[in-house]
Image 1: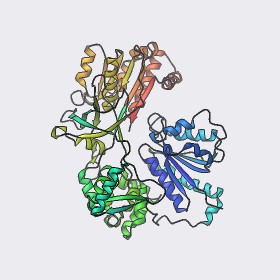
Image 2: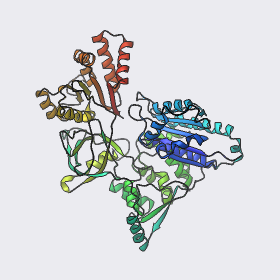
Image 3: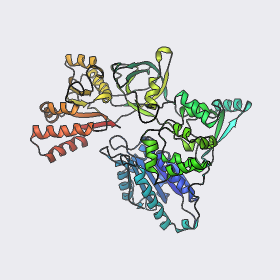
Length: 591
């Protein structure tokens, strides 16, 4: 019997689901299966009725939303007109990647699994629900789930048992090969590229107008307000929308990378796919090594297990190979966590720790080894009504210490913070997409916003927009550490408060003996909130860090309902659930 072709489809926002999909594909290649790996939106969903073996790998974003690269697939799959038995040929498995600190844990995977069953597909094994919060990360679920998956496939297709799979330590062929260009070749290829550009639709290069620190100099946290000029673009946005940008690696990291691999940064190459995949559209052909490393390869991220798996297959130094094999084994995950995840060691630092393997590494494997730099999203902190032709964002510059000698830095926030528009023109390619927050269109509907720290950004946009539209019922709960150090937009809020356009409640957690947070201020204003929510149909919004704050604010809200409405705990919970279902309680949180 012929071996079954396998299709692996993924929906990924940050690259984690893509990494897991590629891991499944490598396991399939080792079993000599014909395998295709695609983002869900790159797959023609009409062909699903003819597929026989498919694994879906998907993450969940925001408030239970599908990732951007599976949104079209999602819309199609939930069409009511799809016939009930249309996927009867399909054997499928769904692997979900989630984080149990979010309320809608693995919501997309669960819903997809249910929908495929409704359409008549045959389930191979229960949906896998990987959890980032697990001590050993997602692999604690993925490893046993994959073992069960292959065991099930072997039962369905016994011919697989007749094939000798490649050993885990045998290298697979690279996905792409590098063809380096010399002398006249570079000129010719560059001219061809000019005639046949392969660039995708390009983000708008917005000029940075200012990069301003908004926390007091002595404050431990460096937070910046950035403004961009979008006058020459067709960018439009409303309150709650987000701006996307893709950062670049630091120049010294690019230099170090090229030294470790003993490659010339200005060397030019073209890429050729070794199987039926396509060359990444974002990379020009020809491309320099510097451009590839600076703008494409995510060398400053903490590497995933797959990074060590691939390195172990090309290592010849016995000591290094042993260590790499340990890090890529299921038994070595605790060790890998201690080495990599806890100290937040970067891929570049790992390469420096394995000098023999790095020196032997063929360029051809770079795109298999390093994921692509993912775009970052920021809540837009301004309104076009108040700042025409301008876009502002509020960004905390990520910098912290671990046991590593060098402080850890956030790639995008550090990249932005390093730009100085006073030293000359600086351009940042960016684009805008719809956020998850929706604000009411009715003029009289009050809006209650809880936004501690940089969580206040989307609410500044909303308040500016609402005031320009004549919507006066605005209530803001803002929290930070200290009134004198990190009270963002203080003068703006106070002006609006004086003008009667905003009710402002503040919590400064470190300005007194007893810590005071936004949830305490919510409890203190129980009577007002009960009146706004029950008598005036107010909408309630929470934005900020997803650690404890959102659930603490929701707990405070439940107490308000119980105290003011004389409700039982169950009734208060039901009221909260109803508000969420009808869009009157909305969250935008990040970890």
